[in-house]
Length: 421
Image (tube, rainbow, N blue to C red):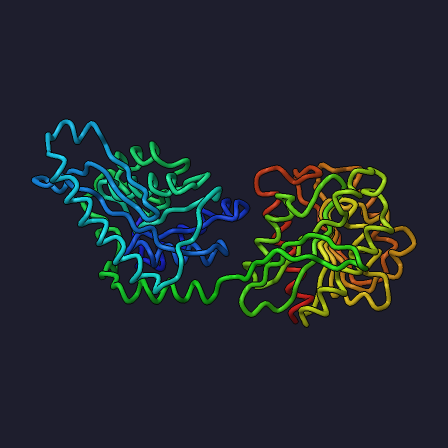
């Protein structure tokens, strides 16, 4: 496999990394050549982009042999075995580390132009380079991000020799390599254009990614005088916002809703995930199935959002949250421009279904037979533009491979068609 240039390699690599979108990852490029590749990956995943600046600590008389590596935040990884085997004195090792630490600080500051390093604690982190020869730097980078608190480390490269790719699996939870040719002499031979990446290009790409980054904040929603916790995400130049209504037994932290929300963010749609009930109200199980209460909270939240952000608003409902979304949308002044139901119970909206005017998409798993019938009954009661989509082989929670991604694609297309036109 040969790549046109680093941009082409990054776009192809991003396709192989799509499954990581649901993990809300951070993408880190190894400067310099890894950053153009990482930029394309970050854009495709809707993820923040940063550099991972590491410095290998080379044995003084044999600098190709590394006795350790250092990274930002005081991360220091030393191989005591190599130190012992080389017999290099402590004074010489300290001198090497001091010099590399100064260079690390200089490069990190120059690349970010004063922006803070992205925090990695508890995050999924994708380390990207334009290719691997020996893998020493890539392995050091994985070790550094692990030491910086990353919960899941992925190393992603377009090309690497088979033996190096195998070694990389010792330091990463997952290795994604598009091509591992047996006859390998250098990374550059697998690119038609492998011209050197300049420091200026690295700085420009990081600045562009920072300018395009989404704005995410924790908010306190005023739902008719009741304060509810929420997470509001607004991509740059967002054209609309989708409010999520979770189902029974779930919350704004639902991994399935967050996965769909991330896909909408990548399409330029804002999202608001919030808790429909206060912690005290969740104690009473009946509240979880009180569609009238949930619909009222959703309507109040939509009003709050429209006062705060003057953009078209859509609703995404799951399970009982779908009934709440449809009942809220039935109000004459709802302001809801489109509705999507995932594995929902729209039948629980009852007579209010006939009052819904917002275009409505009902998405059900093909193996969720009971809910399919309930959705068909609800669809017959709708007097608005509507469609029922059945995802083959999917069950109620869409946990099967590719099922949730299909839901996200359908929701993205529905909202962009009806909210952004």
